[in-house]
Length: 353
Image (cartoon, rainbow, N blue to C red; front, side, top):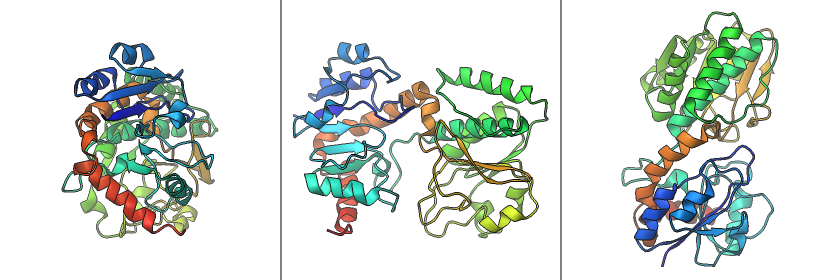
């Protein structure tokens, strides 16, 4: 019998969850066993999971889960160097040479566990089967606009907390922009035709900004891209791969520019193909922006769990996309789970002993 263990998230400002109570009931009806850890922060209350038939376990007890349980979370595990004997489903950030990737993979090797990375759950054509992309773009554009508003006050953006829903976010953001007394800035979204770029463009348009939308055809010449420097805000919504152009090289910081905020929604400063190599670390909800230039200021927003700004909408949307894939957990060697396992196995072979 397949046993799915839904762990509580340990990361600050991570209130999302990858399965709803209705999803739990669906899996139980298929014969699965589902355990859900209690959580003081999860956006969906534990009572709904209990009513759906889930077993309820204490927060953080996944380490003592039965050996055959499949542990399911969204973001990274605590970096405590413990061995990992279980099979885990999460965004592991371990297959593109990211910081701490090798350490995580060694933990799996030492424990005999396996990582099924949510980013690598794909169909036969390589298309992702579930993604938070729209809400990453929507939230990334919102935080980038908060960075711009802070600049108008002579500040750098301070801590940002989650909002109960998108309407609370847009109402508060509109009031913050209006309070600056400035005309709306203009923005350029690169990758505007994808899910991430669509979310970013929708938020910016709702806030009344003029938006330039670029797809792959607009960047295929490889650069340079003076048009980006001529906008107030730049939202990078493409995930870099070999051959991706550099949109804002470090040398551009010393030249004339209108650009004052970069929202790097893709957020891969450690990757070898970073198209925005003017910063070297992710930002977070306490300090959402890092300043990389002055006169005029240039702030980079690079938070790597942006959908957490709207945990309810993003959880409900993502859970609906993922549920058909979770129904296949009793066939781990085939389909999307088999493809994700192949990525893990291949990558692990390249990790030095």
